[in-house]
Image (cartoon, rainbow, N blue to C red):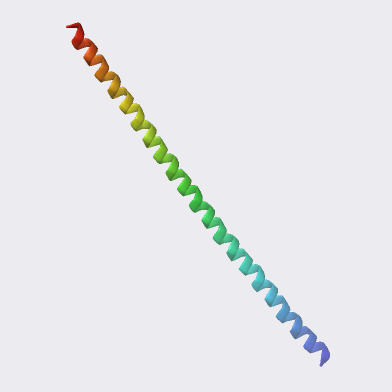
Length: 76
């Protein structure tokens, strides 16, 4: 009888260990998802910066065009 009780106890402990490992894996998977979200947010910020840089370039070109136009008008 003592032998059978020991086997049952060991089985319960093994099941608990498997459940604990599964829980840790689930937490790790969630963390990986969060990391992916962070990368996406960073990419969005970078994309916005690129748009802003393009706008700045366009503005500079427009100012140069206006200055050139004024200079050309003055030549007349």
